[in-house]
View 1: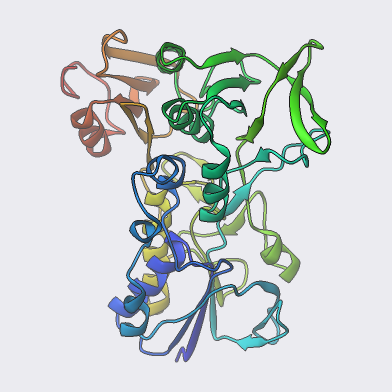
View 2: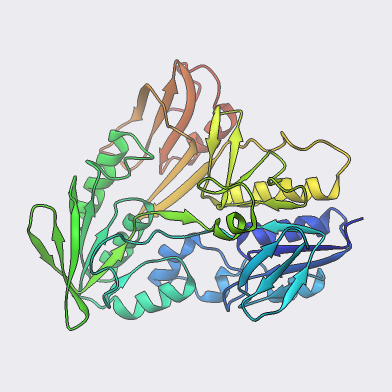
Length: 399
């Protein structure tokens, strides 16, 4: 019998794991540890509607505060876990307190990747990962200020869109030869390049950064690989995220750019499970190990973990093999991605990139593996149903 489950992490995955455990009839002690001061909240709106001021902090909360009491979930905030002892089956908090557990669920998420540049610690160099980050950024985003965004991925471009709307001058520096190169085709990269340029942002691709220059301890300029400098008031580091897997690794669990789990979310220790952005698992669908940073993955993998914990007599080790999906809002454009396009050998453009509604289908050996939909929700929803089928005209709706 499982008497006590402790969930480390109070983001989307942690909350979903706890909720599903209760829904599936788990009646034992259930503790959730969050390392922030706020109740569990959604992260995707941080770089969009929360930064722009369209929503207040309360609207970000995943569940009302009463939910945790009603479901007998002992939510402990500002609780930082220092170490896990797999032999004693307990963990130690930064406060010195110890908690025992019968089963442990790690939902520790990711953190912003550190900018590996001289000057990255200057005042005015910012990253965006938490409510606290955004509350600081809002104070700094004053009309007329000049912001340099290092990184032309989702976060960098979403913040660029909001910053332009708030009256800032924005320069985007991307090391790759095009925006969003790791996740979209040249068609889509070009579309977003023109979108942001048309709104007044300056964009430079294939551009390396060597340092951030300061004056009196504060950002003054960004120095490029060619020796030139761009003066600025603020620098946003948007160079990706890294999984918070150090706690698991230090405890002796198997990690490799994430906590390694099977299809049930079980780690290399039979009593420890993990889910969400911090996790890497083998996907039969894609024939390789993957780590997903998305709300879809956080929710669905947490459900798989809860199912395995509440139904131990079944083999759940192959349960979880999702079709991933993602989205990004930039200005008036919604990009929705279904599937993973890595390894595609053909990209089929359906529609016209000069319009604000089209999609790109990615094929591998004639089979549909992913679809990027730009203001085209029908193709996105249908793609989630038909990915994996052989491509033919009419498989997805017209543009």
